[in-house]
Image (tube, rainbow, N blue to C red; front, side, top):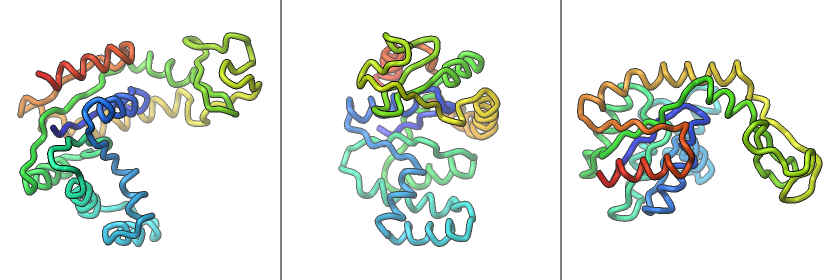
Amino acid sequence: MDIILLGPPGAGKGTQAQRLVEAHGMRQLSTGDMLRAAVKAGTAVGLQAKAVMDRGELVCDAIVSALIGEELDAMAAGQGAIFDGYPRTAAQAESLDAILSARGRSLNHVIELGVDEDALVERICGRFTCANCGKGYHDKFEQPKVAGTCDKCGSHEFKRRPDDNEDTVRTRMAEYRAKTAPILPIYDARGIVSRVDGMADIDAVTAAIEQVIKG
C-alpha cells in the first residue's frame, strides 16, 4: 500500500508516519532525509544532488524522482511506502504516478491531517524541551510536575526552538496551503483523498488513519 501523508508542520505527520511504519512495516520516504542519506552514501543520484547543492541551487524534480525510484527499488517486495513532503506540485504528482506505474504500483490513499490554524499556533508556540534529556513539555498542556525541574532527569535547563513563534508558524501554514493547493484536486478527482482531524488526540488520529487504510 502506497500513501501520501499531508499536513502542515506541527500537524503530527511525523508521529503518524512512524506509527504506520511500526504497525504495518511501511517505509517512510521523506525527500529531505533521502537526499541527505544519498549524499552521505555517495550514490550516483547522491553525487548529482551534492553537485547541485554545492552550487547553492535547489535539487530539481528529475533528481528527486530518481532518488524515489532508487528507494522504491531497494524496498522489500510488498512493502508499502509513505510519501512525506512529496509531491508538492502538479508536475511532481505526475512524476510520482510515472515512477509508481513503472514499478507496478499506484497510490492507494492521500491522507490530509486537517488542523485549526489558531489551535496549531498555540500547540507549537507553547512547546519547550528539557535541554539535558530532550523530554517535551508545553506551556498549557504539559508542565513539569515541579516547576522548573524536568520530570525525567531533574535538570533545571529548558529550551525552545527559535522558529516556534507565531509569525513563523503562520508563514509555514500559508506556504503549506500554497504548495498543497495544486495537488489536492488531482487526487480528489480520483476519489482517494481522506481528511482526518489532526487536532484530535494522537491515538484518535492513528485510529482514524487505520480506518481509512482498512477501508
